[in-house]
Image 1: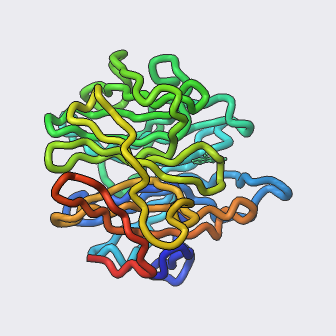
Image 2 (image 1 turned 30 degrees about the vertical axis):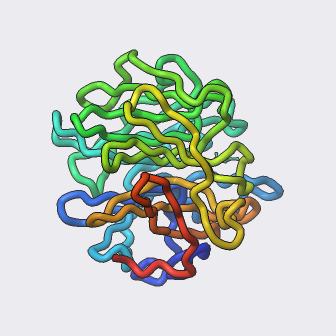
Length: 294
Ligand code: GAL
């Protein structure tokens, strides 16, 4: 697969899974993302959303289209960055996504659940987590099994970590603000070798900017922005991409980027790049022209 371009599924159709994530559930890889497979609303940088798509794969290269696993809930004009987690307590798969109005002023989260990773997902509710505004977001499961929503809040100025209930469908009311006034979005969070990392973008809408990573030893405190991990041509603009998720395959970690085409969002490209650490835990993400699976 050529990094930065739109990729095709096993039927030869463009993969519509933007702002997405890849995870291994029940020995199969699943890729969830925004289905933007229609022309933009003329003259705008928006499409009428088509719901959340799901693709499955055994090798992270050949992706079979499993269809729309969550249609657009009534009244939702923006459906972005869907993320799915397995919830041990209930044995169910829970999806969170950014639910918004046309002008992005609603700034809420949709929550849906399914008994199977391949859906169908059923809507549970749309909330403002802890009565806060929430735009770009991701989910994270800690090593003790606790699950969290990371969301850009205070008009994208501050990142919030909201603890989730045991069934994964709501917030507990316990939350922490991190990276105050740093204006980070598109968070991708993971844990390796005892350190929590978050890769994020700055806030320039669909336009590329400099990625930064932050790290801490304790999930709820001590987050520090560390540097730009991207390396290679055009690294200062994240290779014209924006972070959406980091997944682990074997011992290795991989970053998924979206390469947005604001005026033709359905043709936006994808890339998957290795996340490399040196002995001191410094992160590097080198550009590679192709994604060849693992
Ligand atoms: C970006 C965000 C995208 C989308 C876009 C709309 O900053 O990461 O998910 O919301 O803004 O302009």
